[in-house]
Every structure is written in structure tokens, then in C-alpha cells.
Length: 473
Image (cartoon, rainbow, N blue to C red):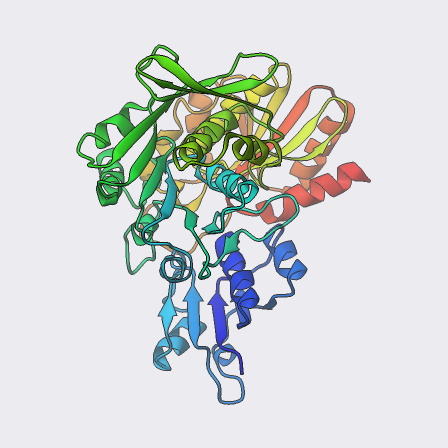
């Protein structure tokens, strides 16, 4: 009889990916959650994962059998979860997913970890594309799905040469309030950029940087760090590392090792320099949207090259990578207008996405539909939205997603609206999802040069799908 894994909170992108990986390994897999929404629901359906709505203790007993392993979403409250209470009562092996990744994915002497306040998911997925083109056996995890809903988690096997994982700085669990990335034992580390994020876990920017500094110190002397050389915060935390550092930059006048030449024609170019001499040029084409992604390409290509991946494999890996769902994903478009879905649920991610869209579509009126992530809903995070939204953008706040109860004070839609309005930005609240969909539908069908972007980590209660369906009909 196969081993049995049960996943509490299976409707997360990473936990859904774990479900697939365990099933591929021959495990019996079951899972439960409060709600199932695209793209996770589509992924689970595609791979025929057994899912059940709600949490019931009876799920952990079938014909007097119990799961061999129970995985739970550590960032959600567990106090009143029947299944977690039952798992503890039955003495079952109970863990969050970082522990599973450490056991099933990480190659301790060849662990690649991609971290930073933004861009880490795309950079991680891009690395897997490059390594695949180079025919290097690698295990991996990244927290998103591509447009074809291909698996985003792959376990290691005896032939695995490298592991490639996205290193999230957010907490392992409410009971174990340490950053997830400490479980991944980095030998090779990419740091894309550092801006204060997750204020519910890190009360000050200094405490936020401290965890990254500790992570940097984990990289051994024979390890390698690929770093955004244009970020002063990164240069600061790297001062004490023993590992070799490769700095990447978009400024040819900076002291860096790899450069992105954005304005080169007919192709963009990555350039490696040593002693101010050009020693490698990698022209490339990309299929994914967003000039900001050229920086992610730079980091992934630099690490790949330093690990002796061929130039041709790097170019093929970039050219064939189509991007990820919910990362500036175009959900609908006609000859003039677009609907875009993005994971810009915190102020730094939101700012990056909006600036990128303004640069990519300078003549379009942008409407930003914002639903902040749980970590950015605390009252102390409210001021972080200052100077993060361009004045030309029009903001609509839907009714915020319901979050688990917390002792932490949270701001309301009205308080965020007031802060945004104070900066001279058009921001209003729409409590009715139906009214919001109808208004956006009318604008997109009857006006020109309109770009609607949904920014949030939640599902928007299916609003995006409903809007796209309405526009398609």
C-alpha cells in the first residue's frame, strides 16, 4: 500500500505543487482547503489531485489508516483547525512545506537559492528553463505556475546535480516565526533587491535586512553570490560574506561584473567584464512581458554562466520562457486595451509592477485594482504605500479579502483610500464586486487605451475570471 500524504491548505501554489510531486513519486495524496480558485484549482484538476473543501478531522482516518505525513500552511491560523488538532492528537508527522523542501529537493552541496523583495519567482523559474535546455538534472520549486500549468515542484532523484528554489523571507509558520529560506542551505545565492516588506513579521527595515544578512552568512567560502549591484542595501549586507560575489548592474559606469545593455539593437545584450575588459557578450530574445524582467534574466544568466552552463543553453532558456501566471500576466486584450493580473500585493511589488507597466504602455490610462496581502495589511505597513503609486494611475479598492483573526491592528479600505488621495491620486472604493466588474467591462469595451491591472495575492473572489468571461462574450 502506498504511503499517504495529506496537505492541509492544498490550495496554495507551492502546496499544490508539492501534491503533484508526491503523487509522481507514487504517494497517495489528499488535501483540503477553505476555497479553490484558478489557477490553483485548474492545476489540481489537471493532475487529478484528490481535494476536499473545508477541514474535518475525519479526513485523517480511512479504514483505521492515518497519513504518513501531514503538511500544513504555516502562515494560516491553526488554533481551531480540526485536521491539525487531530494530527497532533494522533501523533502524526506534521510539518510545514519548507521542511519538506529541505528533505525532498535541496542538494546540500549544490543548492541554488533565489531571494529578494521582488523578481525571485520569475528568476527561479527562468533558471529551471535554462538548466533544462542545458540538460542538467535539477530539482526545483518556484511559487507560481506557467501558462501551461506545468509542475512548479520537482523532487530530487539520485541523478540530480543541482536544486533550484525560491527563497521566501516570510515566516515558516505562526509557531515558528523564522524566514522560510533558512531551510534551504544555499551554496549559490541570488539576491534581486531589498525593500522593506512583510511589516507584520519585520517591525523595522533593519530587522528585515538582518534576516538576509544571516542568510548571506550561510553561504560557504567556496560558494557564490549573484547580487544586484545597483542596490545599496545589498552591497551593505554583503560586506562580511566569505563567499565570492558577482555584482550585476544596468549602469555601465558602475563597478560590476555583469551588465544589462537594454538599448542595444537588434537584441538586448548581457555583458561580462573583467578588469574593465569585455570578455563575453550574450545577445538574447525574450518572450515574456516586462522590461523589468530583463534584470531577472541578467541574474539567472550570470549564475548559469558562472556555473559553466553554455551560452547557447542560456539563450535558448531565455527565448523559450513564456513567463508565469500572475506575474504581469495578460488575461485579455483587444487592439487597444488590456487586462493584466499581477502578484503585486505588497508596496514594493506594487510599485515595481506599476512603474513597469507605465514604461511598457506609456499612452494607456492605468486602472489599478488593489487588494493588499495579509503581511501588508497591518496598520504599521500603511505608510509604506506612500510614494509607491504613480500619480497618473487611477486606483480602485474593492472590498478587501477577509483575513484570519489577528491581534495586530489592520487598516481599512477607507484608511488606505485617504492616504492615496492625500498624494493627489484618484482613488475610490467599490464595495460591490458586480458593480466593479460592470464598470471595468464598460470602460474596456467602449473606451480606448485602457489598461486594467489587478494587484494582489488573493483571488479577488473570482472577479478577474468573471471580467474576462464578460469581455469575451
